[in-house]
Length: 438
Image (cartoon, rainbow, N blue to C red; front, top):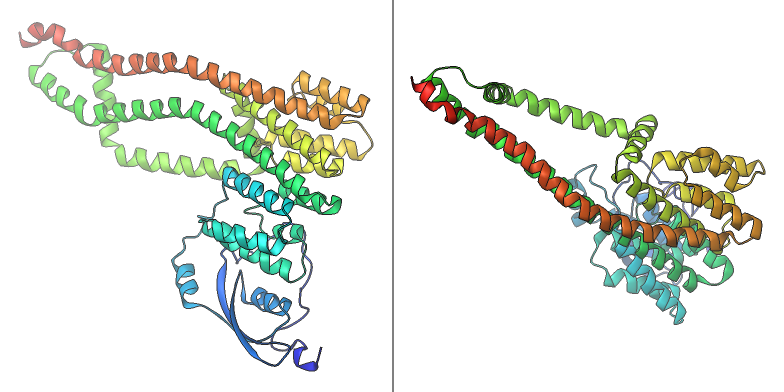
């Protein structure tokens, strides 16, 4: 290539690719949003070409243009992108839903199996999604692959969309030449995980909705209803029954201190959220959830199902056991279980077996430990992990059905006790209205 295409280190600086980063690391703490950049560049024939790239910074835009075999002349952010960035609200970043990612993985596998070129498949995936984050992600992946990166390298740069499980599976598929099969396994795993989350959320949605409804009724009664009755009783004179006096006193305190109560509730909620983000706070919070009656057992079974499925699919794909344990620890959704699995990983690093160390952690059920032990002895860990996943998925379905059948009468009884007690306390003086008038 002629000197015309030699990078200008003064203007654009450094190597085409820049320093290597750890897989999955963010490129910069300040680049949270992708932006569209317009460029002018010179091609190999000396012609000026215009185009657009979607990326996270101007430096990355320069790198992408160079990967296309062009020499950048000017790079500028488009006005629409600048306006969009200014209007974005910090802290509202999100992840792609597992169900959407499962559908895309299955479509990707179909195209790869049919012999569709990788770049063409990425373009199709980009064009058919209505999700802005996915659209920009597939566009960036296409540019990275077009510039010479492997698919696993391209997706590792998007941790908000693809977790380490996805990256490791794609890397193993590239190494084995069975990318379509790996994508199908990923799609199946993601679909099962999304389905299980939906079932658990549907089981917990009813009691949570009922609790909020009861709370709303209590606030409405304390704020509007009880004060009306209190003024009537004060006009009548006499001594109110003890339950009524307690309810009226609580209503007076609630209405007078409502701003302070609202501020205290908001402060406690914010403090709790920040505390849960700390390592010790997350561990204590998740440990408390596992001890909850009914709910704790359901959450543990759900985590064990994810444990079995993730370990199975990674083991079958040939991912090293230490990497498998590390990735699986990030998918369990519980800090207590994640820490126990990471401690097991350190023991395996020292040459110990998995099952005895799982038994030491106590949070893993005995059935899981026994099946893992059998798998290690028989050299069929992938099959045992698959059995664990299937078994606990069935248990989660059974537990969800039982939970839904049990929680409805309990919630109805709870509503009756709380609201009924308030109504009885409120109307109790009516039975003594004659005495109060006298």
